[in-house]
Structure formats: structure tokens, C-alpha cells
Length: 67
Image 1 (cartoon, rainbow, N blue to C red):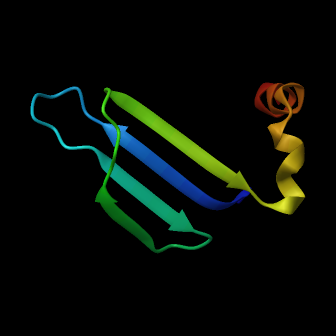
Image 2 (image 1 turned 120 degrees about the vertical axis):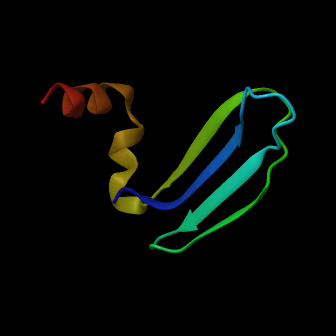
């Protein structure tokens, strides 16, 4: 709703796990491929659309979450 594109780059803590890269461009379809992450954890990147730049402001996000 606020992002034109979302990417997720993740690597499980489980032994011999392979990193996964997930990407979705403004819709319901997505692609998955081998990621390049070499440490355990997940990185989620939102590419905000022009109408949602206000949500890049920490104080605005806190205000929305409190409501």
C-alpha cells in the first residue's frame, strides 16, 4: 500500500541453509531466487511510493502506530 516495490533478503539460522531473495513489484506476483546474504537474519527494504514519503519520518510512523 505504501511501497512500489518490496525486497526481502534472508538467511535462516539453520545449518546449511541457503540465502533467499524475494522481490515484489507493485502487485500480487513475486519472484524468489538465491540471495547473497552471508550472515543470519533478514533485511526488508520498502521502496516507498511518492505519496508515502511521509512514512519515512520516524515521528510520523510512531504517530500512526500509536493510533
